[in-house]
Image (tube, rainbow, N blue to C red; front, side):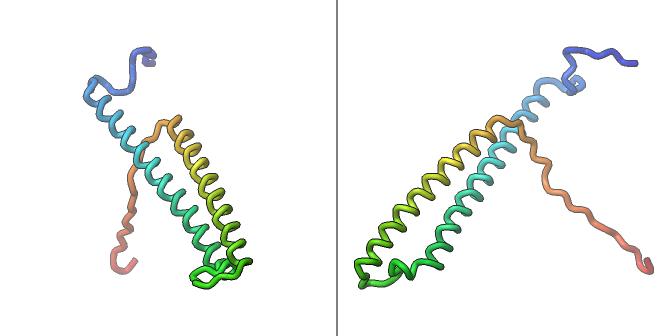
Length: 121
């Protein structure tokens, strides 16, 4: 049975260059994950706001030039709500990115399995 070496790090003598490349790959993987998470989060928030506007925009005269006083009031309420949603979403995005920063990430790449069938199978 092999003895456990406390200084063994799994690199089997490949040295600091291999370790450095792995560290760079992990850093790039983390950056890629954070960038993708940030983009998807922002897209989700903007998509939510767009859908609210498309379903309920008629209430505050969305795309209308002459608005009633009631529509102006509802429009101001919409702007306030929109601002709160954006602020909350941005805060949650920051918290998510802070949380992801605590992890070590390794991107395994995309995997494609090809199934080869011979004639007559």
